[in-house]
Image (cartoon, rainbow, N blue to C red; front, side, top):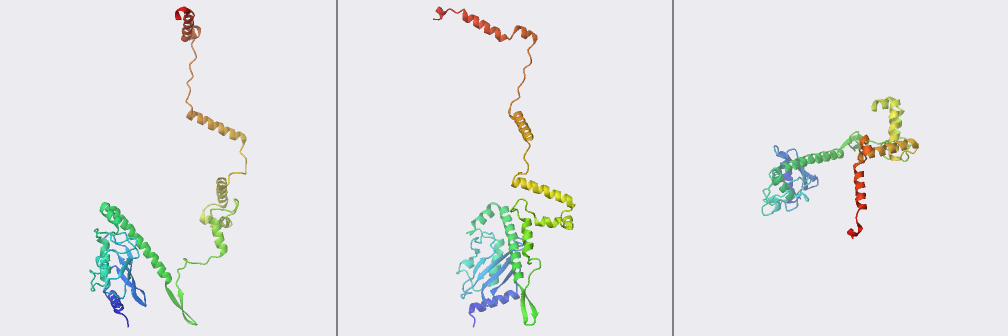
Length: 322
């Protein structure tokens, strides 16, 4: 005979199936036990949480419904009243057993959490970062909620994909019904080792030798139809492009050791470089104009001053100086 808590949970399950609420789904994780559930809660329409789908884990014990269940978000939203580390929502009747009432049902718990998303309580918030952003920069909070909604949709899509892979179908054989996993064609396929090696060698960025051939490009060269389909170039032009790219790649990776540079070209390049540096860094010198004929005959003015200074020095009396 089942316990009282088990029978109450059976009743809750039947009520959810008969009277479903918008945006809320819940079911036990195991067929042989009703004490652990997984629920999904959608954000309310005409709110910033619209479009979000959040998974919630509920754990009951034998004392239900004298005490509330343990509730944790599996897809944790960025919200002032939801702990980012544990995923526990801050709901008064879930945290305080004295407030909990036996009349509260599983649906009422999920509805309260659904309303909490769009109506945060900023007093005693468990996520202080979300609370501060909501108060100081509401636009940033709105954007973070939008990102959170998008992330929940991606998580849901991934879980649905795993659920589809886990489904089975039954094929009839001589020995009876045999379950056969359903797989999506094109998602999983067997590949031979030769095909794998050819593909890997074609896309690998490192080569064992510089002159190592690319098997994918070789296949294209040997098949004009593939070459035309992928590149739209004639075979000769394609080979020229490939040869040029290979030479550039080898010169960058290994250096160009095939030919020595011409000595004269190297010197010309150096001289050209030096001339350019001179023009940039050395100031231009102004060439003085040639002296006129009159100046050439008279001489520079400073020469006469020098002669006068020498003559005055020679006429000085040594005794008077002493």
